[in-house]
Image (cartoon, rainbow, N blue to C red; front, top):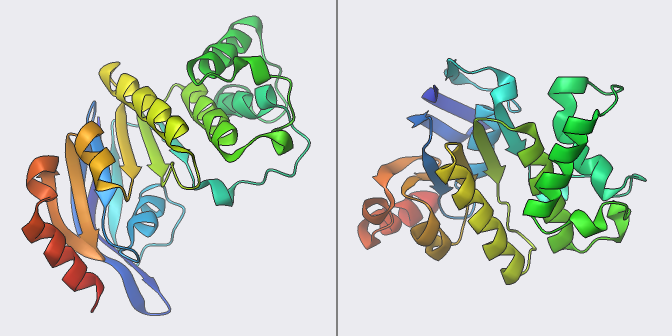
Length: 232
């Protein structure tokens, strides 16, 4: 199982946001997608998910179905104004199993509570999501992702506007998911977090600068090259 990205190019108003990027994300792997501001990291991830129109290239799901991939968008893209409880939001991770109007059975209900417990939000199950802090809300979004029980987890800037305690608690959740056999691909900007938790890194600055072991990719030479490309 893998996600194969071949010669991917995405443009905004004829200006390439990402161009000619190729990489393969294998099963059980753990990748950070890094780069300077405006490097096209989020655009790249959205294109991989099929949420962004592609100019050239393609994304191949090798022995995977769309339901095998869970996607966590940036928190700012999620509507928090709807009248919904913490449990109901987390249970949306069951969508592929029950659809929009299906009922949650006893086993699925336990899965939702287990996921909330894992992110330390089980005690808030009946609270309205509008009354959560940014950190609490992000924990619930993680629970929704876990409930899907997908083989690949894709996350876009999952720690923006989240406190340090929550950030490191959720990094530990991702590390545990990787240990359990899931693949993790996350857009991140904190290089120290990447060095501590992610064995592999894709460094982009609209184009691919380097990919491979994090210790080799996040070196001074490669980071300087990425910064120079981003300024062009």
